[in-house]
Amino acid sequence: MPGSGPKRHVNLLAMTMKTHSGQLPLSMGREDLANWDNWLSRPDTVALEQLLTRQLPEHSAYVWGGKSIGKSHLLQACCDALGGAARYVPMVDLIDYPPDQVLAGAELSRLVAIDDIDRAESNSVWQEALFALFNAVQESGGQLLVTASKSPQQLVDTLPDLRSRLSSLPVFQMPRFTEEQVADLLRLRGSAAGIGLADEVIKYCALRLPRDPRVVVEFINQLDQLSLAQRRGVTIPFVRESGLLRL
Image (cartoon, rainbow, N blue to C red; front, side):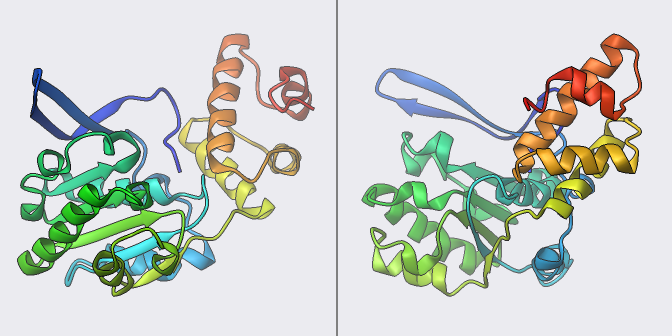
């Protein structure tokens, strides 16, 4: 799930890559509130959370599911806990860069987090690099966390050896949010933003918001800004008048 409030990016990976045209500065970042404190634990995620937050031994995992269900937040929370010992690799941002330069030295990290690995489907160069990285991380005793929109078996356009390696990891499917969990997220992010949301306000909003944590967090951000600007408490009439629910 995304962090709330203004997006302030903290460098988690910074490198300079050589290209034919010279030096290309590349900076990978994460949202400032994508950490365990702002993670909404759910019954279906407890086993995964326990696996990932154990101190020793560190466990690798493959996490898959649809959009906006918390996969990126999960990886970034794990990276946040380790600071500079972690390497976060968001494939959506990096697929067009040379993998040998993007992944240089990654096997030395205590944790390598590959977000949206299915972006590399049909890209044999990236797949070969990821396969080599997988083996190197295992040899070094590091932790490998991977997310995707589909299960390892569904990666039909992926090299069989890489698919086999990914299938060997503990595999978890992330659940979608329920209406009750949207309410819990409203309560959690409202509290983080310093907004006192009464139960009836939370119920009113949860009933009308999509079960999409990104939309919920953005709603809280906008509600907080509007409340501060108008110097009004957040009530059902205020939410209705705000037009943020677009009913």
